[in-house]
Amino acid sequence: MVEKQARIQKLKSLIQLKLKFAGSSSFATIVDYSFYQILIYKNFSPASANITSSGTGMIINFFLQKKYVFELNRKVSFAFAISLASSLLGLALSTTMIHNLSKMVFFSENQFITKAIVTGCVFFYNFYMKRFAFEKRLL
Image (cartoon, rainbow, N blue to C red; front, side, top):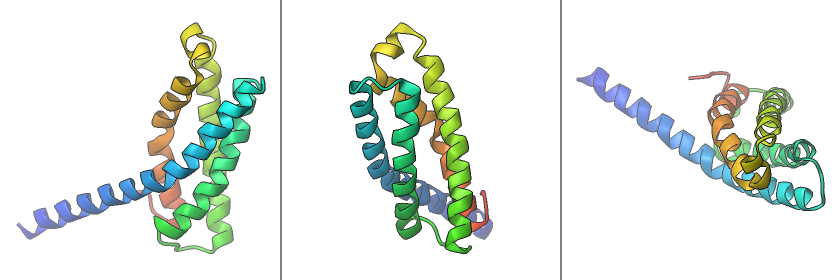
């Protein structure tokens, strides 16, 4: 019974952490989406717009997550380096997805939907890699 309660508590903690992560990421994502749409409107290619807007979002996200989501169990500079590296891999993944989806007429004409689908797909990768960057653990 005690073991079951411990597992339930661990699951609750993980869900709360993911909700905090989603909340802090929401602000950075709003900046990312807004900047992305402005760049698309200014005739940037979808891939270029994604790289620029995501980079801005990455920096904002790091500082929000450092302050509100994760416990910092590393030097800030090392956590930032790991966070940046994992974000760059996530950026490569999301840019590839956006590039490929944008080849289809529907997604090419609906970049907000394209960006939303890609963001949802990359969310869990980002959560676990940021957790590793800050807390030295994945699970």
